Image (tube, rainbow, N blue to C red; front, top):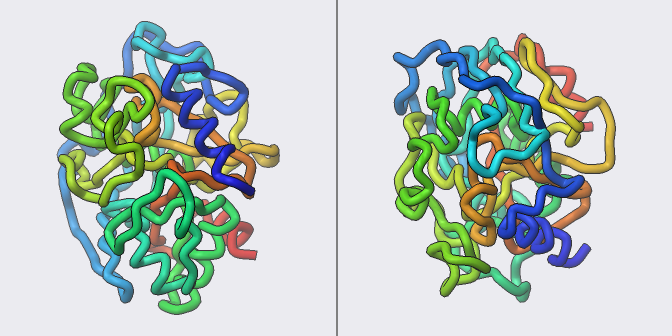
Length: 296
């Protein structure tokens, strides 16, 4: 498909129009403090065969979603208690063009609008289907299990122990210190309407960069109506829309919050859509069936 669906999603986010592509409601007034706060800091980082750095994300529990009094909150951001029972590795940055090309041998962003070219720029104009193909090929290359994170894992990693609107606090005035946003509004991308080189801004407490903008990131699960709690939730069992998280260089500040969720059809592509990948630490992870399903 063309870049239009992804850019439409971003423009919707830019004006905080929460349509069928966004997610979840009915929260509590306060968030429960997450467990493992002592581990809410940069930990072990490994570098794989294509030079990608992945940070170890510890297991723990947290409150997913947003409280009812959070500015910009969607009615669909219901708060639920979630346990991530196994640690996992997650890309320190979004998958870059250099990493994509080394695995797939293609350049889907080439010649497209709203895209800069270079090895450290995010791989954009990639669909959910494309990202799954990347994970499968890299897994075969290394004999390991790479996959997309679940939506719950993504928010847990983004929050990095925080309970605020953003991983750095509640004040959006700090957003430009952490990411690129507001390309069609008043953000720091308004004069540079494209996804920027990864890792230029500040990281969260898990050492992850660009979690509140730059490109929206595909997650493994379908976009359900409400967030699912419990142990290692996998999200809706079926649907038409896959989850996109993290806002993008197009998005308004409210669409870059930790709890904000968007989505797109599995074959949607756009200049503001990319992904980061997870690496399993154990074949016994309870989400292994979902991982196998991704790779079929």
